[in-house]
Length: 204
Image (tube, rainbow, N blue to C red; front, side, top):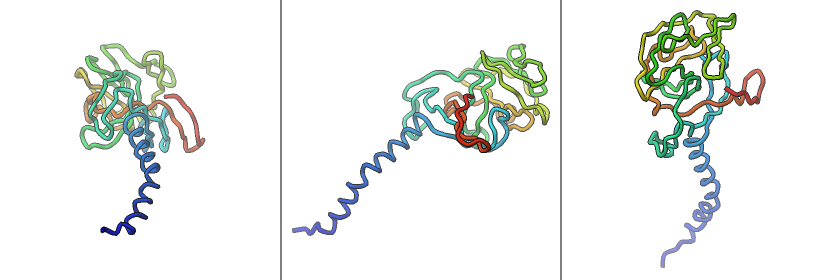
C-alpha cells in the first residue's frame, strides 16, 4: 500500500491556493483581451500625454483575440483617424503609443509637422496649432519644429499611419512606415494617472 501521508499536505496547499491561481489567471486573461494599462515613456505625445502618464487601454476596441496571442477571434471596429493606439514599431519592435492620422486609402502629405489628407489640411492654423479629427480637436506641439516631412504617400488598405502630437520629437510612421491595423494592441481611452496630479480620469 502506497503511503500518501507526505503528499496530502502538498495537495491541501495546492487546493488552498487554487482560488488565488484562478484569480491571477482571470486577471491575466482580462489584461490580454479586454483592458490593460500603459506607461507613457516619453514626451512624443505632448501635450495630450506627458512622460510618466498611465493610460487605460481598451484591448478589444478592434476585435477579440485569443488570450496571449494576436489571433483574432472576432473583428471589432476599425481604427479611425484621431485614435491613440498601442503597437510595436515595425522596424525594431519597441512598444509605442501614437495617434492615427490616416487610414487605408488616404493620400497623406506631411509638411512642417502638419498633416494634409487628400489635399486637405487637418490643421486649424491658430496660435496653438490644432488638427481636427471628426469632432475632436488635437493640440500639436511644434516647439521643436515639425520633424521629418513625408509624402505624398497612399496608406495601404488595412494599414494606418501614426504620428506623435509632439511632431519634432517623435519617432513615428514618418520613419518606420505604416502599421497593419491587425497589429494594434488596442486603443488608449483615458489617462488614469499623471505624475503631477495623481489619479485622474482624462479622456483622450
